[in-house]
Length: 54
Image (cartoon, rainbow, N blue to C red; front, side, top):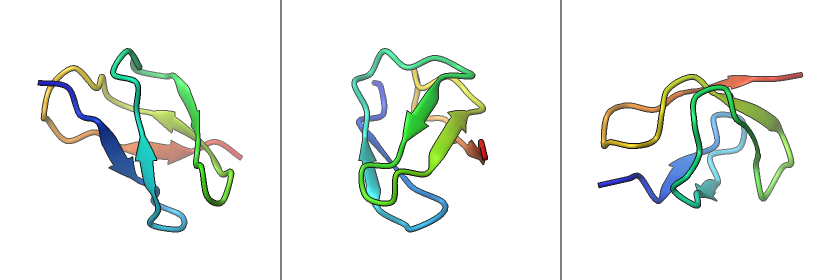
């Protein structure tokens, strides 16, 4: 089962996901517009982390 949303590490807002995101994809927070890069694939319930991409 894919993860449907993640929490922004900058502002703690929920970031909705499409489900087709891959490792190294850039995602923008819908609230604070921080650019974030996925460090893991989103295909499973495993821990997915962001790194700030400033």
